Length: 357
Image (cartoon, rainbow, N blue to C red; front, side, top):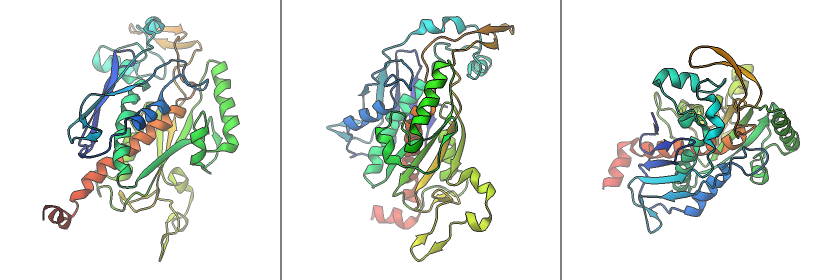
């Protein structure tokens, strides 16, 4: 499936070394101010080649809107956007067309489809996420209309960091760090791994504020399960935590429960979700990224004939995908909230009656 969402949905298309990537966003309400400068600024946050902590691949990631917008407003019809690739070096992958890179989807794609685009992983490349960020920008413009805001950043790199977040700091950080006291050590970990032709993992944190009570369905389309689905669908993500997450397994019920007083909740261990439905507190999600599988060290693998061989990868890759991945995670949260916001409008017959009367 290349489509995500029910009421507010998007479909991405394109490959890492194809002519272009893009997205078609459907279900966008008419009348939203479509700020193209904002959309491009979101793309600029994710685009590669901006500093020594990311891949050297240079892409402008300029978004061209093809449909669904007239005189700066959404028309209620599908918004199609395209991003043309400008800096492919497909020859870097000629030595791996007949083998399976460790940690990549080469093996599973080949066995599932009997064919694969070996140039940078084709559809399985993290370059596909450019379309998700473009779609997420549209979702954010919609959420802005109702006062919902999102933020994200990197809390840990190679295990270095803390759970004390300063999201504002990420705006001026080359690695989007939200733990400023650890930023220099995080940068060093990335550059050390890069110098050794290796990679490191990391953790991104995404937060949404001013989220209304009531978003999410009680059983099969819960807010937390949908967030987990959205985050696990990002390339390289191996774990997702909502609120206190894994730490809650080491607490008691008394400590973990978010008790209430006359003003509301006294804590937010639940991360803004109870019973799959938002409770009005901030949504907080941790997203754990594995080390970039594309490393430039001699490795052992299998070729398409089942023979064991040694090889060394060529190309341009992020030494830590968690950095730019944090922007993608923020976009996916925006898309989830937008979808559930629209689904929630028909929750009570009184709301439906009020609209049609």
